Every structure is written in structure tokens, then in C-alpha cells.
Length: 107
Image 1 (cartoon, one colour):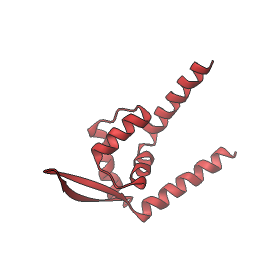
Image 2: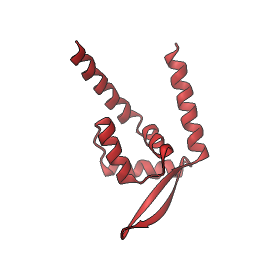
Image 3: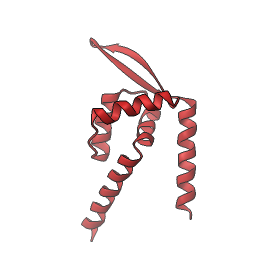
């Protein structure tokens, strides 16, 4: 029974990550400024969800267009990265998400 429960938990986490990827990305960026490849690695390691570049980078662009993150180009070791930082609007969006989730949990 415990193995089945663990399998269900893993499946549910993966479904949440896939369906709420924007929330998960904002949560990662909220923790510390980061860049696309690092987001990809952390998501794959923590949630066992493979992210394609064709999904992640358009999402980052959308989050920036909507004002939830800002990006700044930084050179490091001969490479240029777009480092993402959460904005006040992004923080407010996560607060609203957490509030809705909490309300749903108590129903």
C-alpha cells in the first residue's frame, strides 16, 4: 500500500508541476535570482519533470512580458545569461495563488 501511495504522490507532483509550471518557476526565482538552465536543472532534480527548452524559454518570456519577472543579461565565464528576478507583481501573484490554494484546502 505504501508503495502505491508513494507512486500516486509522485504522479500528482508531476501533474502539478506540468500544469502550474509558471507558479513553480516563480517560486524558484523568488528563492534566488536564477537563469533558464538552472531552473531547468532544479525542476528536473526536485520534481523529476523533464523541461524542454521550447517550453521553458517561451514561459520565461511570457512571465517577463506580464511583469512577473525581470531579466538582466550577465556575463559569466565567457557566457551571457539572462538572470531572472521576481518583481513585486510576481510576489503578489504568488501570494494570491497561495491564498486560493489555502482556501481550497480548507473547503
